[in-house]
Image (tube, rainbow, N blue to C red):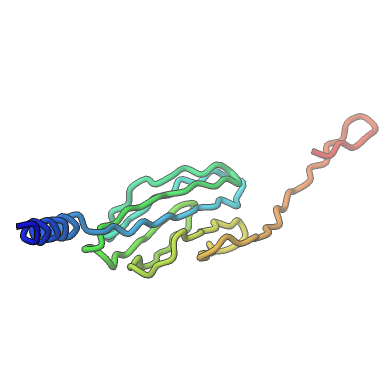
Amino acid sequence: MTKTRTVYGLALLGMCLALIGCDKKMEIVFNNMTQQPVNVELSVGRPHQFSPACSLTALGQDRVRLKIDDDRLPVHCAWRGGGFQGEFPIDKDTISPRYIYIRQSGPPIMRDEPTEIREEIRREKTFIKSKDEFVVE
């Protein structure tokens, strides 16, 4: 009798685990390296159907967390923002978090680990003549 209960208990536990399944947790870290705010839109598993993901301040950073059912893997992830766009596949072996750097001086950079990226920010100097002296703004 106890063996039968144990077998039924293990079978019930196995069925519950099969119904629950596992989810792929993915985190995308967007880094805005420009002087303007950027609104990022994301499309996961739905081609050309973008939804707002995050708003980045100038020189700001934000994280987007995704939870994808393993039955749907692999899925296609696309993003756009700041006049740039990018895409990458997400499967069970995709490294999380994924770092995306939106740069001022070139195309975005995507990395699997945080990277120090230096951007040279160029500012134009404006000279204003004020009586006998020059003022630089």
